[in-house]
Length: 235
Length: 235
DNA sequence: CGTGCAATTGAGCACCCTCAACATGAGTGG
DNA sequence: CCACTCATGTTGAGGGTGCTCAATTGCACG
Image (cartoon, rainbow over all chains, first blue to last red; front, side, top):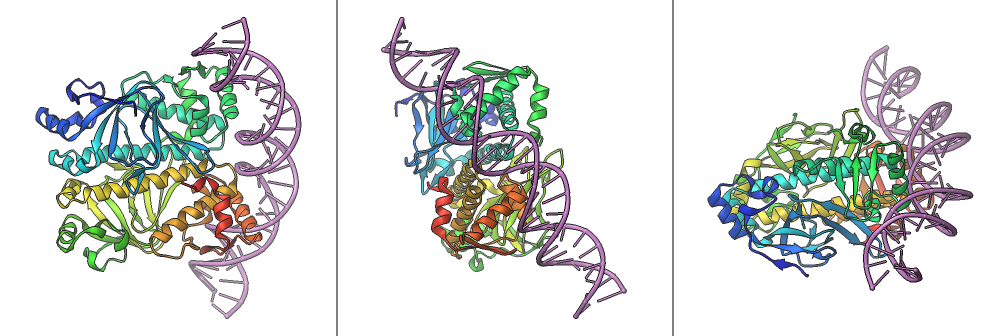
């Protein structure tokens, strides 16, 4: 792992508004910093953890974007998620070992919580906050499942865009500008379709003026149309 | 809610081998019983909780089977899971409210853990056990997502059977006998396909001698073939 | 400027979805 | 107990959508 260690300094963290530590006062934040291990920086295409690794930590994304995936015995890759700041990853474990790998799609960082320190969280009344984050994560996963239940490619694509858009909003970033550091292949895989189908679906949406696309981002020009096409997404 | 309250008695619980309390000694189990609220019994077609309810508890399935689902603004139902003893449900929350409903498919029961008591779990060192259960849950959800990524109906069906089969094994029940208290419509919905497609897929698998089906159960006659068809399922 | 990978575009086919008719089974009331 | 009804599940025919395979273009890198 090419990650470098830095000190944990919640007070200067860019992710504070969506962080575990959000609601803590100064003193509890200090105690949280003691419980958490120093966060790690991970450069593009480097791993935060790999499938099979002993799961020593839970991770709290601090900046950048991570992709998680698994590989089955046939060698097929399955992209299981794209994660933005504020989200928890590393939960998917069996017998204390990670079942998926997490790779940085751009220069990223993540706070680390030692598995063994999980019990200590409640001393500062923050265990429930962690559960809240996990609950939100669960809801997002459910939405993704509903999205996959849709057969039409355009519905899945717009569903994906709505999902990303909503998460960007929470971060205070522009909801119309979906940056795509991942490849089209990754997105297609994540959405359970072939690369070609994704490409064609995007092409149609561009032709009708709903989207603008480049290699690096997807721009939503008609948010209402996107909402309409990804209909299942309504809560 | 037509649920009736009973006292919590871990010592006589049928679910002990897969329970949170599994590894606790006598005295800690006593303390757990104090932290947990009395379990509830839920009759067929009654609700454990409903979408929109204030999420006062997490639930730990004790017996029977629950189905969780959401309904979007169009009135479409989406089945999000089938849950067996030992599994945690009620995690999917936003702002402290359930985003899905949980209904009993047969006479069932569930232990209840007050949200407010989450922090107390660590006093008996059991918070990490809860995280382990949540981690396993996460892995199962991931597998389901991979299953949905498969386009062939038979692959999804066999993937579903492998999933159920594995969970039954963990409970010490026969892995070849999948009881189906849910309707075909529910299964099809859960697998992201139409009722007709499911029906045809099952018919083909019966015709080739892989399965036997009745309204109440699906019997796996050729486990190897099932494994083969649900190929993604390999870890 | 070439090389190699990623992404787009095209043609044909397989599979699933839609719509429809039919069969089965559970629940009800006579 | 039987007939009736309604819900659920099965089977059939036809059309649409995505997948497969293949060729082409676009883009980053050396």
